Length: 253
Image (cartoon, rainbow, N blue to C red):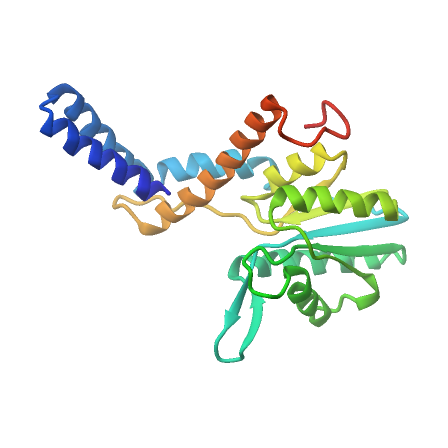
């Protein structure tokens, strides 16, 4: 995404030069070079990542109640040619590991602990994230009897909406939400929209790499951060236009 934006700026520079709009051309050239340098050296992605993750850097000390749910949000599946099977994507394993860790911490108190895996077949692979992630959780020691699959959601909004329906049925009084550091803020916003008070727990923390020379990595993490910012903007616009589902508790989101 960041490269597309820079490419569009470059095309505008060429266009202004052809039209002999010198001042505009000089300004766009300066803006293009500055953006490339600030992104590539890590300054812009550091700001964007801090904005998304800073409030979630410290993991909460959870006080488990009598009826607990740990919600694991999907992040895709991938086909492995050598095994002819599907596995979670690279970014999913941190979420799965954190979920298993939270479950084991909850289970120490001998109280009701359930894991809800929220994730359908967003990529059209023929298998759901819930199905594939369950296999990994079983390997990590989470009993099958304590796993609930929500196999229909294909994005974060649907994760929140369909999980909220499950919560009404099971009446959990403590909800722990697990996702990546980049994704957890938007996830919490959407879950709040559907009336769910959650305890957000990040599974990882992404940082920019400050460098004198532009790095491809910094462009990649900028794209991840911009994806989240677009999600916030879309949510705000949809609320303003009345396109979002009605809030369960007005003022929560």
